[in-house]
Length: 89
Image (tube, rainbow, N blue to C red; front, side):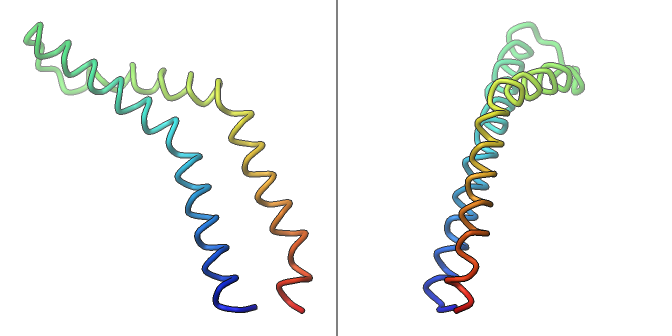
């Protein structure tokens, strides 16, 4: 296994991690921003107000993008496992 192969695997793994986390994190970020704007407009200073909308939004994003995320992860794992003989030999 050459250093280039290790770096390529690390790059692919990090890219996959970012692609899998992006829909959930962006959903939480957008909902947090909207709740903050609502709180600023209504002058409600409740710290726990944003938790329930974020949880529901992340759950909805996970439900909508779950099959895509599983497909990406299974494709990466399949590719990784099929390339083991080339990496070792």
